[in-house]
Image 1 (cartoon, rainbow, N blue to C red):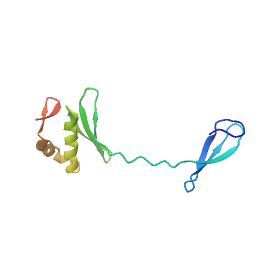
Image 2: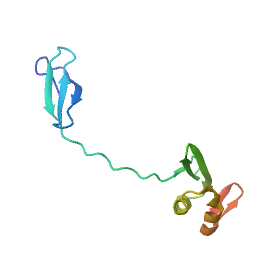
Image 3: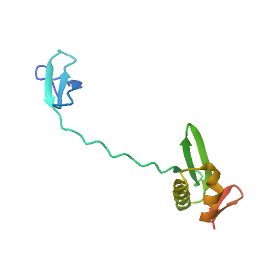
Image 4: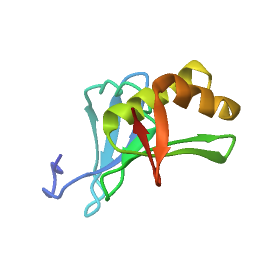
Length: 117
């Protein structure tokens, strides 16, 4: 939005949430103008997936519970990481049930990685 008096770009000052009318002020001449802005719909909340890819190609499963990180390890592929997350959601991320979830999914440790048999 440009100033009607001097043509400088206006700076936004405030918006009334009820009427959606915004106030703009020219930084050069001090002219104040109002304009009605379109309402923007907020983006939907994103569901966290609790896994991410590392640079070495492994997929890490991790969740923070009460400011403490629960890291379940690195997995060879994304599908295995998704299955681990789904299994942990079923047991409400109970750390003591990690071996039970891994056993039910057929996941075992080979060297330093978890693999699905």
